Image (tube, rainbow, N blue to C red; front, side):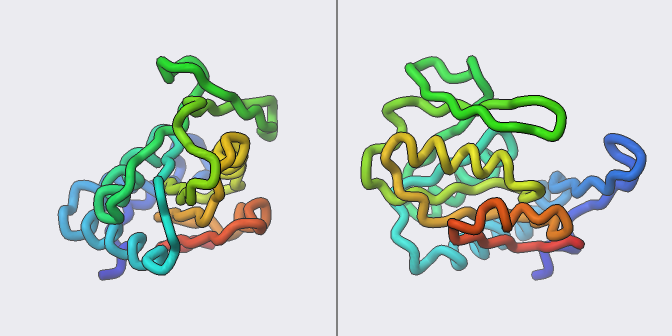
Length: 171
């Protein structure tokens, strides 16, 4: 199955000049969603994975079923103030300002092999921050997986220290 055919492209959303990749059309199609998760599992089948992390919020959608298929647990990475337990934070620069992500302090054990999954690789900032959070807790990031990669934004370069896999690519 060609997953790219299941993704709706909406030009001019959220602003003119942007070509938004809408994954809701893929997610509502049971066969396409199953295929997406199966393809992701296949990409990492030879990688030891102890736990899967997903950044807020669309990372949750793909990381949780992948954790089920790969027989691991799932850990959320969230915006500040969203997690109830004690957290650590990673701040990172955006084009115009700063942002940050948090993870529970007890979410990752030192030495755990961690796979991080998100829907989209654009500039790589969110995934880089998630990886740094995992590493701050002593986890070993064994891979980064994406449904979509926007190649012209060069996010893969920012993540060059990691194994990066994407299922669908756009230029």
